[in-house]
Length: 184
Image 1 (cartoon, rainbow, N blue to C red):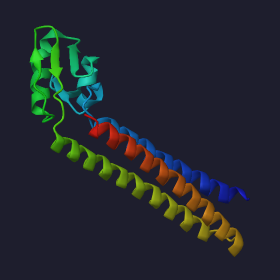
Image 2 (image 1 turned 60 degrees about the horizontal axis):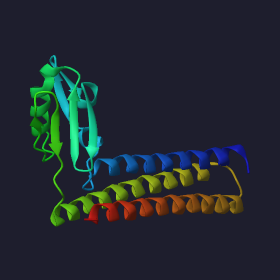
Image 3 (image 1 turned 180 degrees about the vertical axis):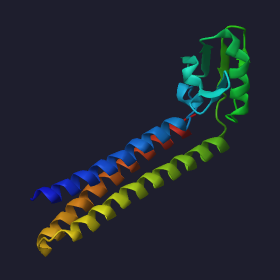
Image 4 (image 1 turned 180 degrees about the horizontal axis):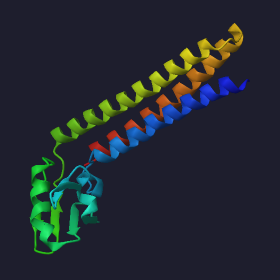
């Protein structure tokens, strides 16, 4: 197989891997009933006039499966962090004890679980679209090369096998996430 074909296949695999990586990051943000510091990743705090991510002004820990603890590096930020968490529309009710902020993560309702499962399914569809567009791009690049019909067909089938492998990974990740979300 010549170098150009191998380069196109490698590029397609790289793009498909990027889609899987993006999906994994998206799944981390979809909470499944357990407390996770990533839940607060979208929260920004007004830190001396600049909107700063919470992770850059405080430690976020999980002492148990239902609790998040936010410990600011500067005590004067407690009120600002509490206000930012409330305004972030994450559905959390932070409690400020003067040293740290404690957030009890409420258990998910059945309706909320179904919504999160739909969200996970939508993210997996986006990943599949990314994988398919990588396949389409690879096939387009292959057609530009001046190679024999047989070699083109064989290489296109290699691209399709790669696509099927990555689509299966997405399906597997989705079924694991759905099971995690629906588990009471």
